[in-house]
Length: 264
Image 1 (tube, helix red, strand yellow):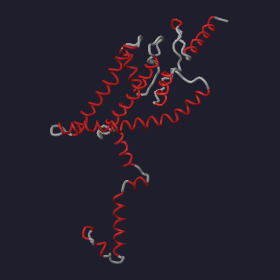
Image 2 (spheres, rainbow, N blue to C red):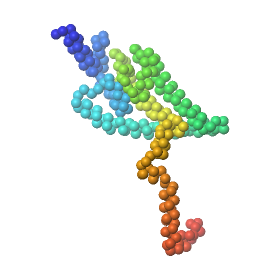
Image 3 (cartoon, rainbow, N blue to C red):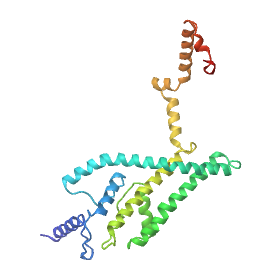
Image 4 (spheres, rainbow, N blue to C red):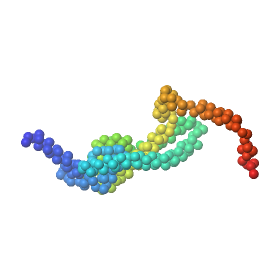
C-alpha cells in the first residue's frame, strides 16, 4: 500500500471515531455522543431546524426515527413557539401603551412604534447575543468573543453551519448539563427572535410584504379575487333585493314593529 492510501485509511478511521465521540486530539476519549444531554441537544436542533450536522444517526432505524420525529416535532415546535410569542405580546403591548401615554403628545405614533421596536431589539441583542457570547467565550477554551458571538447569531437565525458547537471540547466538565442549558438558551432565544419579528411586522410602514400583497390584489385579473375585493357593491345590491321582496309580502305583525323594551 502506498503512503497516500495509508493516510486515507487513517483519516477514515479518525472520522469514524469522531462520529462516535472519540477525539483524535491527545488520544482522549470523551463522553459518548448519545449521552442524555447530547441527545436532548440533538433533538432540539432537529425540531428547531437549526441542524448543526455534527452528530447524526448512523443506523437505519435511527435515521427512520429521526424522519418521523422531525415530521411531528417541527410543526409542534412552531405551534409552541407561536403560542409563547402570543403570550409575550401581552407585556410587549403594555409597553407600547405606556410609551404612547408618555410620549403620545410629543411624537407621532409611527415614531413611538420605532422606539418600541428599538427597545425590543436592544433586549434581543443584549440578552441573547452579547451576554451569552461572553459566557460561551469564558467556557469554551478555543473560542474568543467573536467566535462565540458568531455562534449565537448563526444559531438564533437557524442557519446552523455547525462549525462551532458548544460542549464538544475534549474533557469538557459537566458536558450533559452544559448541553441541556444550551438547549434551553436556543429555545428561549428563538422564541424572543420570533417576538422581535412579530413586533417588526406589526408596523405597517416597515412591513414590505403588505405592499406586495396590496399591489397583487390591485393588479390581479382573477375574477374570483376581483369579486372578493368588491364586497360592498354586491352586499348593497343583495340588501336592496331583500328589501324589495320584503315590501311585496304581507304587512308585518304588531310584534315585529313593537320595540323589545315595550313588549309585554
